[in-house]
Figure 1 (cartoon, one colour):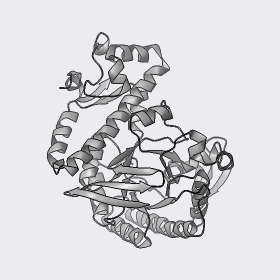
Figure 2 (figure 1 turned 120 degrees about the vertical axis):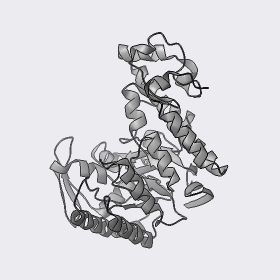
Figure 3 (figure 1 turned 60 degrees about the vertical axis):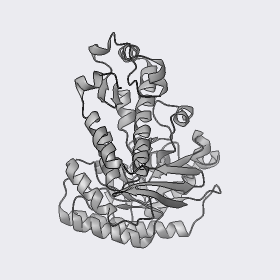
Length: 381
């Protein structure tokens, strides 16, 4: 696998991440398909809206349906029908969120399934093995995601453990082979909460291990946005120039543009799918709540500038009706639209970087995106 930076505009980068399953232009937004499916949309629709990568989650897929079944199917790509790149998270964040059900040690993480209470152990080596079974193109190391806030001593201790786990995962990768004839990349994850020294130590130590790419984890967990941006910029200033950088679980359209400006290449977040299922649509002129009475007789598309299937064929009034009637089609149309919005947003950011006008484009885009409420009701020009 190879990553090439094609153009820089300040710290923002436009690049290409080449994998066995095709080239990924960056910056890229990756829809989240935790359990092997992006909620409320089909693989065919993901292809139509231009998704290049989707996510799966090792924790969830290990518990259900299980890696043995996915191996028998020939890997996750054959199991879910997605022929392009898949990134799988290690499950570290899910373990973090199950604080009452897990115990962390040097060995790994012992936890109880949120499904049936059964006992399990995740080790750095075992998580690589799980992702070998899944056949994901991009794998993540097992890490500990610290809560916010946490004290500096705990953040330092946690990061030291994450680094030792990362070295073990790197060794496991070198000692095993892919199961399905496709190369697999492994990304390290920078941790350290909001403490500069710990983040710097983490980034430098991981860079020395020579991973295929690097993620910045442990953000968007409750810290102020300015702290998120400060830590993101701190990490990208240290991480290798020639490797892709992935900001995990972030975020709003505004968050993504700020992170691109600070040198991030890859993003994932549940916001476009979750908000869509809750009747909130992202547009270039702010957000629309499709349950609002203001849309009852509004026969405009949700966003006249959007080329998605929902905006080409349906009105705000109709989509509002679907939500009020409890029709499944409402969730599907809203999700198609929101994913299209996110994917187009980062594609336009890429175009602005290539043209050397990212700063001006970002300022104009953020100004339009901030027009909540009444501003969103305007027909985009």
